[in-house]
Length: 222
Image (cartoon, rainbow, N blue to C red; front, top):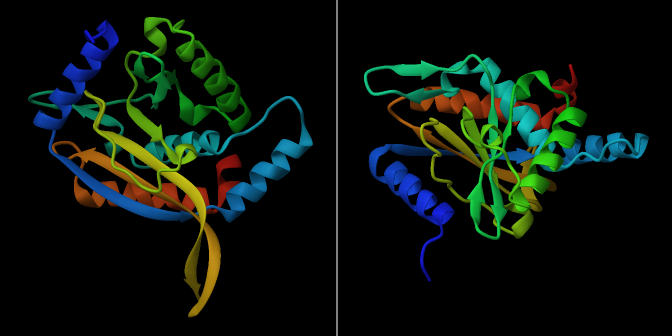
């Protein structure tokens, strides 16, 4: 089967990424019970929007990038390019390959706006109707395979970005609380980062901020 133009670009970019970018990986487990409860509550209040778990993830990542701006960057040869805008690329699987439509200025958008824009972009991506400015660029990426049953995975960085966040499934797991065994709804999230741009401590700080937002989702609404 000959390579399509999209598959050729994917092959070139990901080969370049894996062979030239020094990846390192950080995984955190996020307890998502409060997020699921808040999502259900908000969705029950209006028919004007339907929030997905991914909408909360985009919002949390955008706010974490604003708080830890060193991750919102890229390697530029003899310099590091720091982005003033938080433009989050979201990986979408289509019949012809993977594409990453962008939620521009995601840190300045509420959950309902992110939900509406994300839904529209995903539909356009699957129909092959994205304009170049809707998928070219971005300062950070999110890849969510949780809805397909993947518990945990490490994604390949989307160059020239310096990081990508991989989201696993949301599932009940045993946890220890105050020395006692309990059950919580847990989501494993793995950051792949470019070590030329992001130090380990910086990546850990980003993941700590992200985890705190996911586990206390009301803070995303402030």
